[in-house]
Amino acid sequence: NAGVTQTPKFQVLKTGQSMTLQCAQDMNHNSMYWYRQDPGMGLRLIYYSASEGTTDKGEVPNGYNVSRLNKREFSLRLESAAPSQTSVYFCASSEAPSGSGETQYFGPGTRLLVL
Amino acid sequence: AQSVTQLGSHVSVSEGALVLLRCNYSSSVPPYLFWYVQYPNQGLQLLLKYTTGATLVKGINGFEAEFKKSETSFHLTKPSAHMSDAAEYFCAVSDRGAQKLVFGQGTRLTINP
Image (tube, rainbow over all chains, first blue to last red; front, side, top):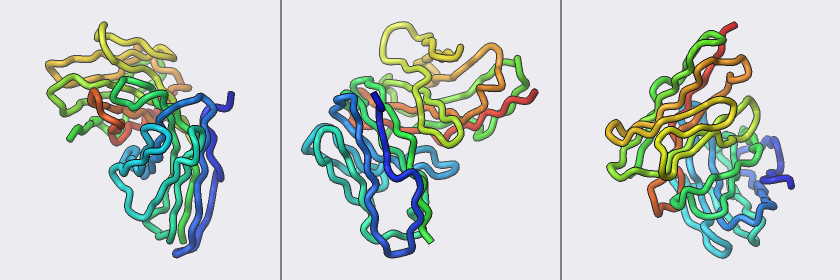
């Protein structure tokens, strides 16, 4: 039982390049989330998927797109990377949306540097 | 909109001393409340949470937190700090029926020998 896995662990991009961050969970959870973590700002929600087949914008969605590929996988795509997207990205999952008191389980993170 | 405030971005205590990390939320209706811990270069893991019932919640590694509705607070405490407690701690809140968590800015805890 690996929990939440993320690939890659670390990535360097040049401005304008695109990439996809992958996330998978093996806990049969319905809800999945993408966050970015920046110093002094806590975690900010980028996009979430309350259940398979649905996605919604979070607090900071600009410059990102997501795909809920199936119940296990939720990917985050940067179409044209910018230096402001340099951050640590975390994927999380929960059995049900957080408004039911469910715990979110986090992956180890992807460190992204955009030059 | 719900907001979360953690007082003090950095807290430093001596080994064996009391740890107190403060968290206040903004909503008038009691939400669900969480504390997460992040060790260096790792993801977040749940320390404890309050959903309903007893207002004093016990978590892992000797931590506990008390939900105080009148003060809209959910402060995290540990009676005696250990070197292994050095990490960043995040308070998070979810309104009942909401889809998502709102995180505080985080508090970095340093333990002095």
